[in-house]
Image 1 (cartoon, helix red, strand yellow):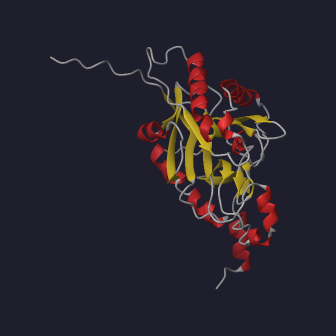
Image 2 (tube, one colour):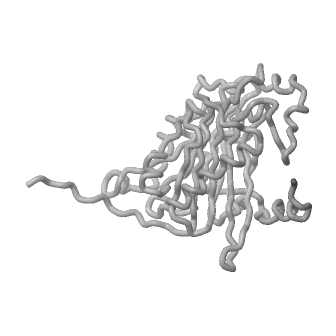
Image 3 (cartoon, rainbow, N blue to C red):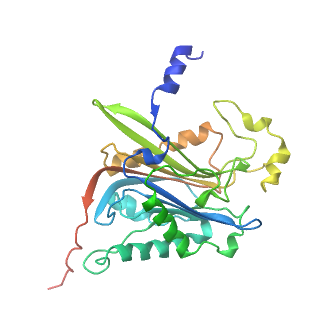
Length: 306
């Protein structure tokens, strides 16, 4: 027995979209891209998310993550979950460029903070990845440190907050459900105790089995001709290939434990669009709140034996 028609409409329209319908509707969150491509075999890039526009190292944010399926090579999640904070921009790129992106992000943080690894602790870079090797010459290592720096700078300079979606930045070479994947974003507003808050999401989509796409409860993937899938390098629609990175931002004042619980929720949305979380997929979510900033504490003095 289905829901009454007016109830279905209520469920769909319960929360309003943010002004831009992007993660940057959460105040002070910034996004920037660098696309690295040519007309043939290079289709990759970098996407940078600034959790806030200030000094993230000395003004950390509460955060939590969830590894939905762990076939991935992300950097920084251990400390993020142990301490419950995020202290750098979030960088997204292709799988084999994680090392380059990590080095670039460390250099960026060292340049911005003269006390790192001296009078303060070392920095915990957050780098996320998906494998764009079906469309990109991933072995060529075409992402360079300057691309990461430029993506961060583009985020810092993005005064409008609006950013491009689709085959751009780290999403350039991604495939989703056998079709072109990439960067997507959305936001919703909701009232809590008489105050209006925002939740925004950014995804790098590179997951799913060709033919399984579901939109609005309809299996539209089954209606797409098979030759469309092969055009994007999905020779046979046999397996759930690829990964997804999900970044959730909000201005609701939440603790790291609450944010970790939120990071567990996107798995339901993945199922609604037709993913079954394949064995070889890296599906990872990170959630953070901009509401409270945690001052960086100096490292404890060394312990000495008697």
